[in-house]
Amino acid sequence: MIKFLIINRKLFLNVLFLILFNFKGFSQGNNYNCSIKNVKTTSPSSLEFDIFIEWTGTNEQKFTFFQAGINFNYAGMCNGGIITGSFKPGSADASLPSIQQKAKWEINQSSKQIRLRSAIAGDSIAISIPPPPGFRLGTFIMSNTVPFTKSAKPDFAWSFSNGSSSATKTKFAAYVNNAVLPIDITIPKNHLVIK
Image (cartoon, rainbow, N blue to C red; front, top):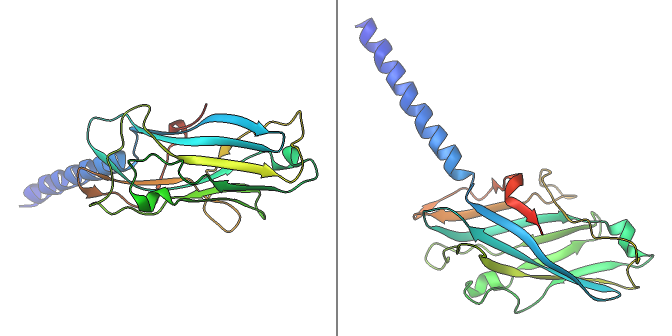
């Protein structure tokens, strides 16, 4: 009897390990990339860039929610001015549900960080993330009250710090094969790209 219980306990632990391992590996979202592209200066005091999301896996993944903090060289660029930013209306991919085309993008003046947040799309309206080049979540416009410092570069860097009043943690959520993944999946560092 004791031998039987030991064998069953080992079997149970092995099955539990496999379930947890598979869920953890699945929930990390290791088959998608988020990238900053098309960074360009549009005037001496304005620049813009796009955020793209692409799916590189074999199963279906529907875009649910995206939140990101992007740190940048505020002090080097401000040149004595005040830098503000906003989402460019109409810049999101037309295939996104209308609720996700009204993303909240801004520069937080206390943390000097760009903050992005899309609205949550339910499974019934969420769209599948396409393969590369993916879709454009939108365009962010940064403006300064004076011309940017000529020699300064934005030096964009995704935020990996814990979410707080002074920092936004970059997160992603999706429906995979009709299963809801947690809303707070942290995007792995090697899947956040600045091109």
